[in-house]
Every structure is written in C-alpha cells, then in structure tokens.
Image (cartoon, rainbow, N blue to C red; front, top):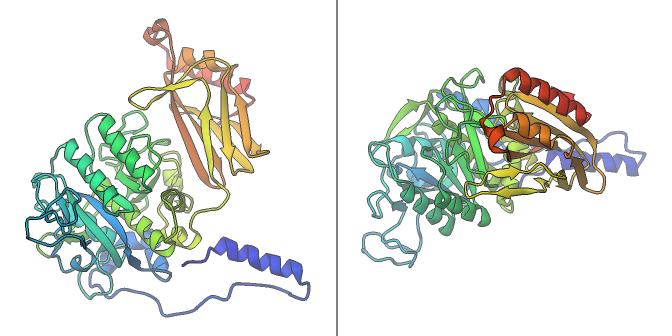
Length: 475
C-alpha cells in the first residue's frame, strides 16, 4: 500500500514539534533500481512519460485483483501482449454450452459478445484491442508495448460490430454485466445518440455498486457544455469525462472540451498500442485518452485496494498536473498525473456537495432553477471554498473564503429574476481542497422570455450587474 506523502509530511512535522531536540525530519525512502520495462516499443510511448507513469511504477505496477471492463469492439484476448491480463470467469467452463455460474450468459469465459449474443467477445475491428493495450498491455514481458498497468484483469465486453457500430441496448447490457461480474472500473471509448433514461439508469446502477465509469468526451471538437455527447455527458456521480491532448500537452483539434462537463485530459494523439492478430497500431482520438485514465484508476486501486469509487475519482481529479493550455477547457484544467494519483491518493477532508433549493429535476436529468428565495448551499468536510457562477463564457467569483461549521449558504434571491431575463442555462462551480463540484441548471423562464432575442451586449451588462449584486468579482 502506498503511503500518502502529505500524511508523512504531517507526521514528520508533528514529531519535530513534540521533541525539540529533533533538528529536522524527513521520510526514510526506500531506494531501488528504476522499474523500466523491457518492452521493445516502450520508448515510442510518449504518453507514459506525459502522465508520469514510470514514477508510478516505482510504487506499483498493478494487480490481478483489479478488474476493468472494456466496453467496446471486443478484445483480441489471444494477443501475446494481452493474454496474461485477460479476465477469466472462474465459474464458467469453456465450450460446454452451459451457463455454469447461472449469471444468465453461456460460455462467458472472458466476457461476452452482446452484438452477436455469444460467449466469444473477440475483436473484429481493432478499436477495443487498442484500448485494452493502453489499459493493460503486459509489462516487462519483452513483447511490444506496455500499458498503464503491467498487471491487471480486463473483461472483454463487445457491443460494437466489425464496422464499429452497435446498439445502445447492447451497451447497456454490457454495463450491467460489468457491474454484476466484478469490474470496479469500466472504460467507455464510444458515444453518440441522445439522452437515454435506460442508459442513465445503468450507469447510476454502476455508481450505486461502486463502479467507476471512465468515458471519452468525444471527437467533434465542440464545447460539450452546450453540445453534450453521451455517455460522457450524463450527470451521474461515477462518470469521469476525458479530453485528448497531443505530444505538446495541447488540446487536440478533434477533442471535445467543457469547463463544467469534461473533467481532465490525457494523451490521445498518435497512441501506439496493441492491435488484433498480434499486431500494433497508432491511433488518435479521445478513445485513446480515456483508457489512460481508466488504467490510472486501476493502478490507484492496486495501490489502495480499500478505495471506494469516489476515492478513486478523487485520486484522479485531485492530483492532476495543471496546464495553462487546458485552463478553462475542463473542470480541473489539467492532464492526468498517475504518479501523484497513486502516491497521494484521495485527499482527505474534501467531501462536500453543492446544491440549490427550489429546483426540480426532469426525466432528462436537467436541474431547473426557479426564481424564488433561493440558496446555493455547500455542505461537507470543508474549511474554505471558492465559488463561481458561470453563464456561457461569462464568469463571476461570488465567494472565496472560509467555511464555518461545514456549511456555506449563498443567498441568490436578489439575482434570480435577472438571470431568467438574460440567460437560459448557467453553472455553479465550487472548489475546495483541490476538488471541484459543479451544478448545471436550466432557468425557469416565461414564454415571453424564451422567445425574446437577447443581445450579447445585454447579457454582458446584465451579468455584470448580477455579479455586483452578489458582491462578486468578474473574471
């Protein structure tokens, strides 16, 4: 188990305070040879250095106790670089045409093919095998590439065909299968279609069962705050939405972004990984960024096996590397740092929630905000907070200071009518102890307000007034 560097620093400081004969303190680190894999193509995997994976491997290289569901086009589970890290259903006997473990699926030894309804989730496209290699290409085996995890178990859940298309209903079956058969993380490098309540319910069920849902933000190069791509855009607590960066830590031209709807970035440009038939290929997309994050989550779980889904999520989002090039493009404004995530883990004392009274939630899970005596409330283990209100590209910091008795109430009554006259949607963003909570809302408006044309100048003027009304600072 990795020891938190922050906890160690606190212990050392406490020791020095208790005994004044102690002149200084520092942790006694274990020194060992560099854990560099002997995989021939390792030197071409620029992404591993970008996310600080080599430093993380000095702490852990993964665990076969951690199961990641790869919901995709299947996996070439005979690939020399993957076969040792493929999940095996111990309750199933291969090829006997019997559902031995009574889980509802016949011969599901390594997962299931929901597209063809059989127990052979082999990859006939290439996408899923490529994703799997980034998550868990076997490390230090003298073959090909290395994944974020040298050692892990990947569950092959095929719902996409050889052409890369598939039905939402089969993706939903894959999510439920992963949840019911022991996956603690799923990678979801796919998307499209509108809101689906059934899909939402499947992801929410995964959240209720402590399964982290890592998803690609999409490849349309658009602002996902206003043009959502599902499943990354669902408002469910276990979703981590991932954007793609290139070799220079720049957001790629194709990557979706979103200050309130996309969480962090990871390399997704010209990523070399495994391909069916024992081969290797370089592919680009947020599909390639997402498995870096799913793999990082699995590595954190290996180092901290007791962690819940929320703690895994906090470990990833609370330990990013901030980048100026990503500031304002996602909630964290940074790129995945797997070393810091493994080393520091979940930051204690930062569990808090953000909510509004006088709201309602519709079937499409959009919170509607009513102009009444409304309070924005932060509650939880927080001692200070920075709170902003955001409408489009307009941002106002409405609070930055201490929080007493673990609760902060901000009265919005004076601005609700101004909001409804000028804006359709907006977001509240709260930051405490490096953790971010976002609340997206749709403002209840009259028919006249909905049909009225609002000029950008009027919106800017109105936003300045409401910011001033809240004693805020326009950013």
